[in-house]
Each structure stands twice: as C-alpha cells, then as structure tokens.
Length: 194
Image (cartoon, rainbow, N blue to C red; front, side, top):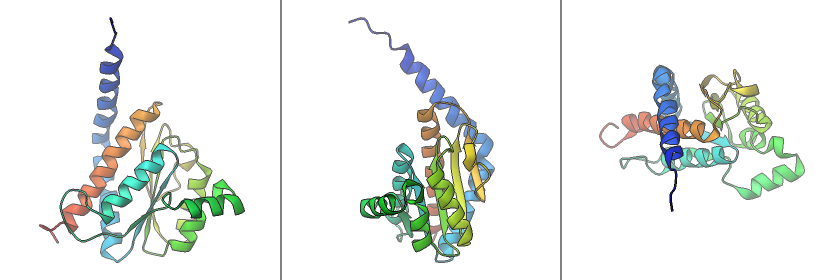
C-alpha cells in the first residue's frame, strides 16, 4: 500500500505552531495560575465546565486538582460540573440545556471560589449563563476560548483566546494551558513547596 502520510506531518506542525503561540500568553497564564492558587489558599474551590471535548478538559483539570498532577500533595478542592449525569439531565429536562451549568454554579459556588470554562468556539450559551451566575456569586472567573472568543469573549475576569479555526488545535493548546495552571498550583501546594 502506497500511503501519503504528509498530512500527519502537517497536523503535527500546525499543533506545534498553535502551542508555540502560547508563549505570547505566558504572563496571562501566570496571572490565572496565581488567581487559582489564591482561591485554593483561601479555602475556596474550583468549578470547571465545558461541552463535548471541552467537557473532557474540564474533567481532566478537576481530577488533577483533587488527585495529583505530578507530585503527591494534599487534595485541592475542585468539581467538574460535567461529571454528574443526574444533575445534567435533571436540569436539562426541567430548565433547558442552557442552564445545566449555571444552576450548579448557583447551588455549589460561593464567593471566593473560581469557575474555569473551556470553549473552542466561545459560542456556548450554557457557559455564558454559568459565567453570569459565577459573577453574581462573586467568584473568580476564567475562560479558555478559541477562534475569536465568540460571545464568551470579555465575560470572564481572566481569559485566553487561542486563535485559529481548527477545533483540535485549540483543544491541544487548552490542554497545555490547563497543565501549566495545574503546575502553578503544584509549585505552591506540592510536597516540596507546601
């Protein structure tokens, strides 16, 4: 079989270029890391949310805070709002899909907590409602977005917009950012730093 695999190299190069562009956001990533550390130091928790592949990133971030990223350390308070199918289906059925996260923020979020949302398009009304509910609860808000940020741009206290049109490249960059945020927390709360 004569197979052209040049597209694989092209995809890897595109991914590397998108991730390389995050160097320009290094200061912002640091500021967000500091904000999340401050929330955790103050006894607050981090709520995460996203749809589809971004839901997987929200799950990944929360489980790494509660479990561990790299080093053994005390568990850090985090809840992925995508993790409870009974809450999602109850709220979706009774109130509509646009409310699946905001109702949970309303019930679980408190002043001094943080909400981190992931969206490759920035076009998620349920995340917009969640950010609004978090703002009303006086929570710190973070949005990791893609493309031009869509309607979610400007709704959070802190945001990073990964430019580009390819959803998978944006998700790969979001994965790097969330790992850096986890690393920032672990540098403070890790066994060698606590």
